[in-house]
Image (cartoon, rainbow, N blue to C red; front, top):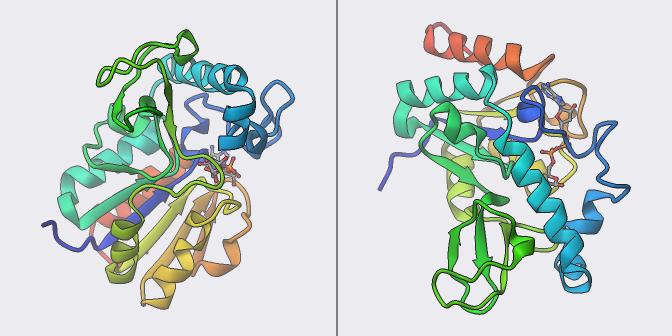
Length: 237
Ligand code: APR
């Protein structure tokens, strides 16, 4: 049993933007002319698994070729100092938090580097292209799907996240547009239970009005300076 986290951090695509991973809803947020909503659904996978595999295989390769940035590194530094007092929740399916040194990352939308078997439901590591239809390491069936949470599916870890939001002192959202629920509502839960709330984002988001404070700028600059504030003592937000 871990302690109730004092700080809950939620990250979105904006934290990986400076590493070269495109966000979903900024100017270049289309993939080969598809809206992400059109490839990231169970219906899309049923209708056209090849297109969906190409989308995620491409993203897996793209992420393998980039590196974490100072924002990921700062959050790893925060975890090293705070341990279980920090819960890092990410909507991102990349592994840049882990590669920066974070050890406990709750991937609420799943992970590019994992697959799930449609036959036996086992989750397994996925480093290569799933369009090649590799066999499931558990049951041998060639029915692997990316272990990412699609629109209309239940995100991972919601019970743990809710408990942390209710008990935390501070909630910080980094690089997320607030367009996708339930993550977009986390700020309201945290605030309702008395947490101070801070948003670090490049631009005003759909949920900016719900935060006590918003700092606009690049994650690679804002996050390290916020972490310095927290670790430096005083009265950080
Ligand atoms: N630093 C900080 N914020 C940035 C930066 C940056 N360098 N670059 C972009 N941003 C901000 C944008 O202003 C935007 O508000 O990051 C946000 C990215 O928003 P989205 O592309 O909508 O990404 P996200 O909020 O993570 O999307 C949520 O939608 O498609 C689904 O499952 C997918 O997890 C994803 C979810």
